[in-house]
Image (tube, rainbow, N blue to C red; front, side, top):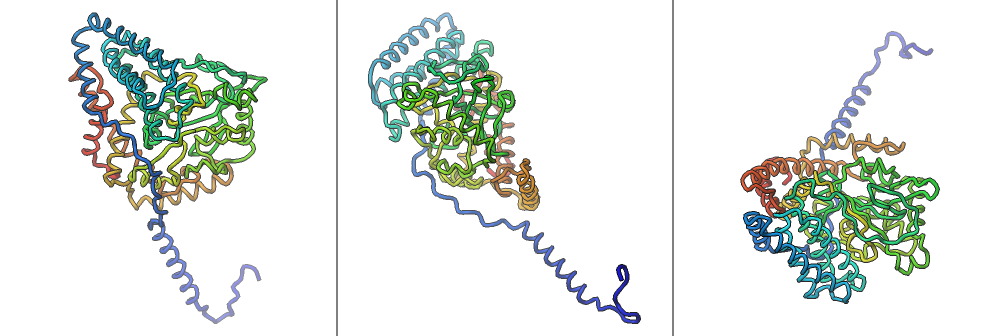
Length: 509
């Protein structure tokens, strides 16, 4: 009967089988607990993309520019401004001449423009009232170089180096001047080319943004700095998103891929709530053959991306495989949307060649090292730079983050790894299992979908090490500023970061 023992009276039950089952269960539990501490075999780190990381190799030049800045400060703006005006006039003449010519990427004229751009920077940094004219010069130079690049082969290394030196170098020179100026003199918004478009529009922070525009931005997390700096041509951007504007309501939606939750559709307010140290607006050129045939192509690409994001869950692609659209990383959101309509973005693919960096990224799950990096989209000749926002208050923090990552990547090439305590592995695996359950019902867990437990621990270690080094760099930079009465330029920040990395005792690097 239910509730009564089935053992006959007077007989003692044999408990040996139960004891054996108990010991077996305990053994299995012990083995399972032990296995939680055992690192699972990781896939071997693949080879890099086979390129060669860009290196300026111009330390003496940077030091000379800093000396020039000091001398200009000592001379005073009354004596320096006339020279600045002459230099700006010469630079404008050179840039104007290029706009009416057809040059190769290794043209001596472009070398001269690069030299002038860098040499004007220290003068403007000493006399920041010239910043507005310097902004116009650098912006015009970028537009002219992008116009020239329309007939360049973006797959050739010489083309890529020339574009990088002028566009990235021009931004770097301008920002060095901005960082020495009072915040009131630094424009938060710099307008670029007003590329014609018939796509639905909306006003966003003083800029007319069109449906199908691409937003390239820089986040504030340490991993954002790694994404921006972690390729053969270190850049300033870490995230890509696609704009959709409803033709009836004018509502702005942003389609983007998040590491934590995959592809999502955000409102403009939600997009801007995430930390954005800088944002650039890029727009497809209106004179492309595909655009002449279909002027609403960008809007149709945005509509298709929006509908797909709402129709199915699209996981984040940690492998960075831009050819497989079952999963998408942030750059791929834009490239996949335009690919449907015959436009191939990223005419020059990004490469990641350094063995140490490849090792670190493979630990996060990356498997493709010739891919689409956010910073490199600026160099695509098919796109016009419409506008760029910088936050003057956080620009210096952006530079410090970059310098710390550059110093950490030096350590990666020396053989440093993102080691983590094995005692944390069971916790990470339990968190991953919990995240898997949440992901199955459409929720977000503590470990991002597609990221392994070990990868999450490596990410934690990277961020922890970055914070430790950054804290030291911030102190050293304040000491530098107190002693010299100006902020340390980027090359000095890198030196401070290298010194801080050597002093840091947090493991991992």
